[in-house]
Image (cartoon, rainbow, N blue to C red; front, side, top):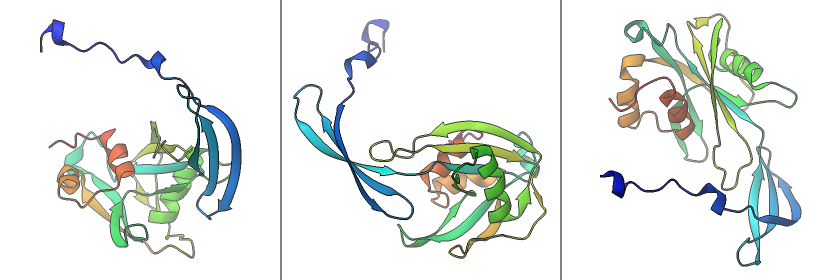
Length: 198
């Protein structure tokens, strides 16, 4: 592509916010609360009902048994559990809901200990992503925990059933490509610290 063919930068200022006309609170569904926002289209003026799921913030943790910079001797801690949406057992990194009044870093430390029994003294924040801004209002915060040690027994909620194992760091890209790791938020977090194209 020549310089003349390079597309111009996307004109962000051409997209206008929609006006909120009214809100209707819906059912509390345990993991989310339904809300209908009636929004006025900025170009046509027509009002459209739009579904929003009010959800707490989440966190997930790329937890490794060594140091990410030394992949030959490092394993990724993963949890296997039955997921109701897909009706199957999935392999994911530990994580969960940020409780009311809790900082997301505190939630990350707690979730790692509760779900895997591991703790770490080496933490780094990897940033946050929007799980699905089309209809969810929350963020998911990614954390890296290195040199994790098994220090506790699992402390699962009554509704949880989790098996903990590890995947060698060098095998993580192939685990993504082969479909062992498929959760989009897991892959998002992993891509912050690993080259998954291999």
